[in-house]
Length: 525
Image (cartoon, rainbow, N blue to C red; front, top):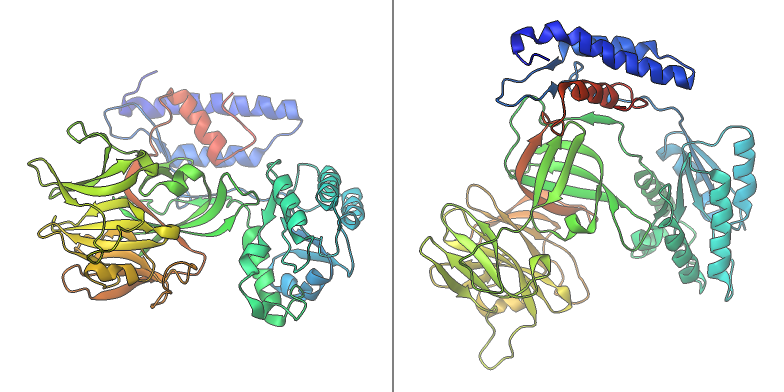
């Protein structure tokens, strides 16, 4: 095959025919032909597939319709099955969730859902999404956990694997709440199409959502309940819009995560993600992404852009051969490199001192944070440290007793310390919770304030959000407000893999493009 750009179009039709022939053969085996896909591919090849002007032979796939690809849904609607709690919120659910069908009645138990599901299945009316909120009425007693497990198994067998299936955990001041919620979480973790919606954790601190019995809903609670379910069942987005299409990918930014959807106590959780630059400008919203423990525990991330979408990966720690044993480099810029030393390694390193390097070797900047004379050293450890753009400051995250976070700024000139919230010297110990995110390009420290009362640290004094703080004057301004459930991740680099098709041949690349962008039923074989 000739890779010369001038003769590429001479071979394009031959490649296209090979792809289409494979697709047709596959579809004949399945008993149908999709002529619409043929027309879409024809348009794509005519206007969107070309060799990039690069030294390596790869293909760049461009969607001809504004860099957005949409796969049409095959089924629609949401079936919600519940008891009197859901019945109260029926109108709110139908107003909030598109295609909601609410089947709720008082005094229902788990087994009552089977008849509803079986009837819908016989009528070929099982929608792609099913939500069940049952268990407020039991079962009770010492066998409650096992009875719930058996009921869930029967329900799952009735539903099958063609629908996404969600259980709502109980917010119920009754002794069987723990057994039933434990069974729900345990069962949801066993099957890929079964999920838990943690209503208990989401609602427990909102007393005004509930009537005097502690679980039936007030009007405002009904609205919150409907919104919670709507946000929890949003499926993976079938439209992928590249927020960086046609423009350079910023080398750093923030990722806000929200709408966490996880039924198990451990393992990956699905989040919606917004990408922002360091100035707080939204770059785009990504399809719901799965974030595992490795990403969730990492302080810094790399943003990876591929033909299949955009995702975050943990940024691996670099090695520095000249560092003392037990030390780990964190971040560096042209002015300063920073490292933590202590016990453990990687994200599990428990730092007890911070080292800096201006280019002439490593030296200790600070050990533990200062305490008044005669007082015991503070309990906790350094978790991260980041140099300012001019090298005059280090922003460091301290995790204290009870895992209370405090963001501190340490001067590289004299080692003085003050909390990012303003408390200087030993007064940092009375500072409200705060988290260090990093530095803005103009030299302001970025911190997350207003985390609220953790039960250990002082309560927040400002609304929750990302603030920019001057390390010299302590002045601050709100960059971005955060909801109570939003988390903040930081990405400090971007890897663009949109033109690399795993090192395969152009023939494979064309087949891959056809399969990914136009016909998900066709694979490369």
